[in-house]
Length: 309
Image (cartoon, rainbow, N blue to C red; front, top):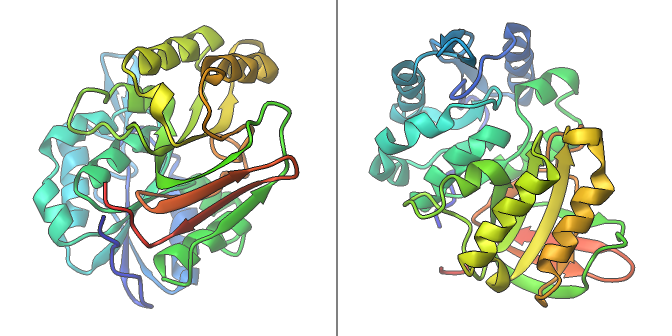
């Protein structure tokens, strides 16, 4: 795995919308936060656009324009980081046309989550680490010195990776695992299984989150992983936030996930602050992580010493 060059003051920071349409004021808020960090924000041509596909799906632009914006950011050697403005749906349209070799030759930091999990998969295929993290909305609503924003800054400027210590949960399974960490939005990643962009692999620490997926839908995805012989052979599992499902019965969702992984013996951490919630902590995809689950807490440590896959 390749670590992109760390950012220096004055570096360019591209903002693109590879998925859904974004409120323009949130792009403007991200611009202000990036300027406060000391970087030069560059807003892509179609970042604030709105395009309706099949009269029901809203994207920032048609697929070829969203690809142009991404490729523009990849082509500019002065752009050292790419912030995705928001998720939604549509990043998958870009995967087959991303210049993977170019990305590997000139790696840049990618920042985003939710539907952007598809782009994290492309970065992983190129062998480049990336940051699963909040986007323009978070930068607009919270100061650049907010915990999550500060952690992001520390990551892409080389000041160090975070260690998270979280409270225990009733469903946790104790244990210690050190492995490559990958994950993101479960529904998005499951759509990439059996493709060159799959990042749900045996031997990894997997982190998952989702929004508006019902309990039975998530269970179906986990059964797919079980039948594919992946779920039994993870190194560890981090269960993030599953929000906006029917009745918002979080306990039912977590109980179901607990039952699905009950036959296995790797550490499992529930209720981790990853997902569509205000505290959505950054995870550096593709780095080596150590997950320690005990009766007293859950500790997740990441570092830039990469374990060869």
